[in-house]
Length: 114
Image 1 (cartoon, helix red, strand yellow):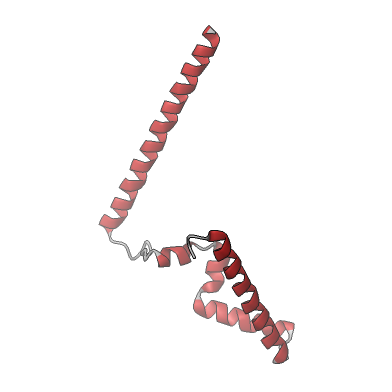
Image 2 (cartoon, one colour; image 1 turned 120 degrees about the horizontal axis):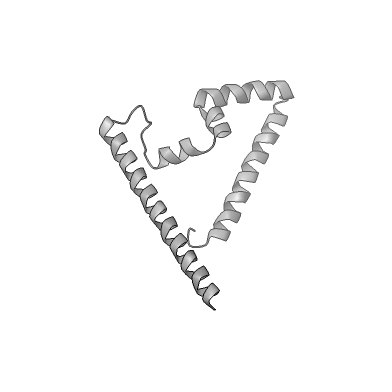
């Protein structure tokens, strides 16, 4: 399916919509009111930790899939290695910005000579 992203998105979208439609109908069949639904959902989301992760973004999910450790679980050397990598990446970006600036200056010089 990953070779056909649009088809994958359509199948996934239909699956998600049908899942939530089913949840909605089950809640209706059980006679759950608005406040009862809110209380049950808050309890479930807080117990699983999804309440916070949903409202702050999907970073937690992606870091879990990548099997990344939380900052407090990392050892000092891992943190230093991450910082070194970030510094190296920033240096590359600054170098590229400088090169692009030089190219832009050269182009402007050529334009002024023409």
